[in-house]
Length: 592
Image (cartoon, rainbow, N blue to C red; front, side, top):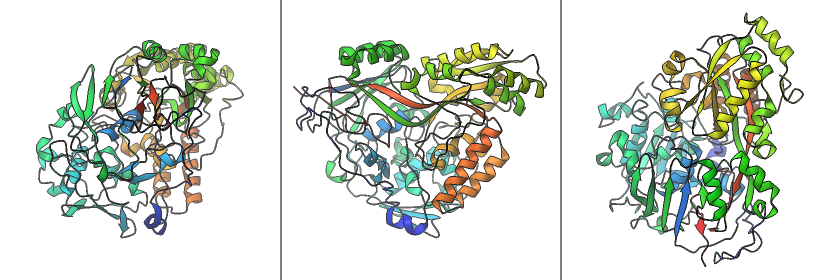
């Protein structure tokens, strides 16, 4: 989902400008018109990295639905790709991914900031100037102190456990277990961030990091007025600085966004936002098959999860040329995989982990995500679309697509469990594809004596209270954890760091590393961060990948694709390399 390239300081000052790819203009699909006519001719892949039914017309209600709730609508407490995509409609971080099709959408551009950050002190200090005249929904102006407060509150991983830990890990002298509630003047952060004036914020890092503009696009850099912060309840009504604001929000049913009359497009020249609908409705906890059926019937516009139709729908759609013409097969920098929790026996033994790798039915894993249209069988961690990634297959997944029981039994003998063992496998109960993964593994591993008991948990609290909370996972024997991860930005750091570095694991929960604790991996990550040459650094990230696989830290499942359904109700719809799904900051409705 996110791009990062840690370049030399010289390159950063020119382009951490962060246009890492040369980009051409958007291509319109056939039948499209600038007016957003509903007569655009549907074609397969018509919105895949290009605009289908281009339009600038405003109006209508965009209807979105999802099978679950996600972690949070609080910009300081969210880590889901769909949320980072949507959040750009109601808050403005310092930088953001451009709302444009294809590779252009992987460029990080100024949003609340006037320009990309200015590095100094060997890229350990980063300075941003804020645009003047950007207002909250109540008419007050966004100031630098609000940005500092927004970042400060996101550091409290007890109150707001879901977001990434980049600022915790990289800002200078951030106290462990920092809480802004206990430090309302933010005096303990005086070495980490400063605001010399109302429109300047300076970040001080504990190490050189030339890709800091990617940190600056995190939703937590959106301003939060300190007086309006309600802690864990802030997610019910984040204060808007973007084109939409919250009209209503029910934590169990969904929410509605309406236009923010204080938003001034003149202060937003770089992001490409179009803000076309008058209203955006998001419904939670809708059955997946119902979502697919409603998309086809035209009484729903977007499955906000952005991961594609259900497996049974996929077969139906691909068999019908008229339905297939409404779909886009969107590549992703996402891995669907299963983590071994090294704190749960017998997965503290590498050979017990290897036994699962050999016993697993890799085609079964792929079928759970819809077969080849759902993605390719993964043989290691980094998807091929990640910069510098190398594909390798140390365990013969492609040769033994349905598993290798002989090698699995040899590994079981080596780990002292020749007859097998029992463990629990966690998955998100409201994600049918993850349930199908757990059931497929249950069947294939049983053939070598490994007995799995599937345990489903709600998506909204999966990492906060269950699979991502170390003491709960250990106490409840969650030895295997089904998960999915998309790159924050597609290079080795943006993809790997938050899922394999043991130092990002927090006792408080909300973790994205769900059990990988390999000291050699941590050392390689530090080596990569200190390496400024692109090719050399990319090689180190491949070494990280290889070390995790050598130690059987995960069972790779599928390098993901999503077969997205595009109803006739939509206009100005496209995918891009920044979101790896439809872009929610520019999507509109077909106007008759």
